[in-house]
Length: 236
Image 1 (cartoon, rainbow, N blue to C red):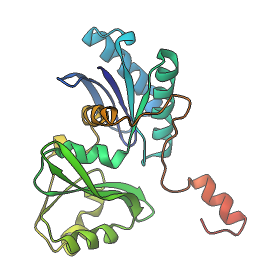
Image 2 (image 1 turned 180 degrees about the horizontal axis):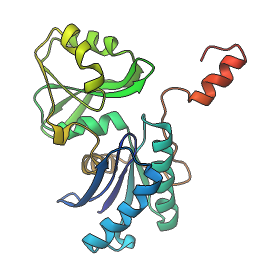
Image 3 (image 1 turned 90 degrees about the vertical axis):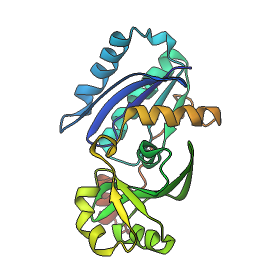
Image 4 (image 1 turned 180 degrees about the vertical axis):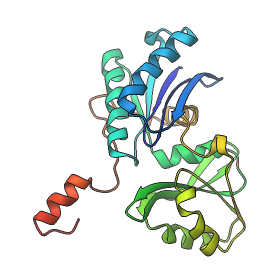
């Protein structure tokens, strides 16, 4: 079973080919460049460098959201294109789940933080028993103070990771009342190999969709939708 994992939910753009036995290859970048310019060339280079015929790919995994609206659409369109062309399923992996899986096996409470802007974070809370991940608080868009309140109530040592860490670090240091620390730089943001590894577990659970049915999960309305709602006098 070979999974092509596609990550474009934030600044990180990347792809990986993952099997149950190993990561065959991983290619990622983390700088401000349009994913539409980088993602398909990455996939092409990865397939060529690893000598993997595209026909050998059994499923496409994609970071299903939340995240950058544009990035999610680019990743979704790329995964849908491969799925429809090859007749393979899509594994849509929640973005916050995928980030948490970077720390698979951690004995600590794991709290991914993505910068959702508008003074909010995309976040959740996770714990591990071996390779099995349990979601204690599902991914959501909330003020960072809300997730900190949950952490304080649980009273467990916590590790933070994600691109929201530098944004919210001052608030964390001020308001988190339990022992806590931060993931190292190589595990701190989205990784396509982690996405692919978690997708393999979801595949075993039958958590797949067709290329035609896959849709990203945004968790909140887009800027255009908010403007339209405000123009109509509705709550955005």
